[in-house]
Length: 176
Image (cartoon, rainbow, N blue to C red; front, side, top):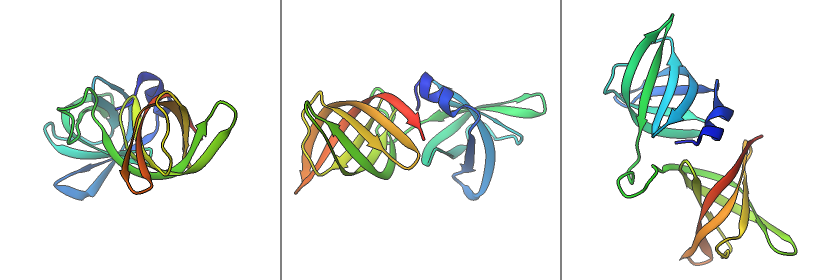
């Protein structure tokens, strides 16, 4: 799920929707926005309500279920309820990503950068894996080939030898 500001940055962007029962069938849709865990799209083809689907946008695959498909002019407006495996435990659904990027840590006197991996994303945050421990409250930038995300570290835990996972509350999103 994306916040209103992020949603408007992606408006008009192509979304590929595939039915989970028939992954070979991929429908091209136009992203209209998100609201309360639901993605709104425009398409030229009817998608049966209650169908389980995967929506691909900005190199992220989001599982969901079609809530409604209503004819609008010559096309259809589709509403997809987005879900994730941990949706019941969190205030926002998280979606697996596995996207490599560069982690830039802003310290008091300098900036340090290293490689990292975005593990998952939600409306207001990301979880990344990196080689360094980072203090809570530190400002971090996560840079990929298509976006720059900036936010504050909310937690950082060591998971494996020389690998740390950090939760970042996103405050800024820039498409490149």
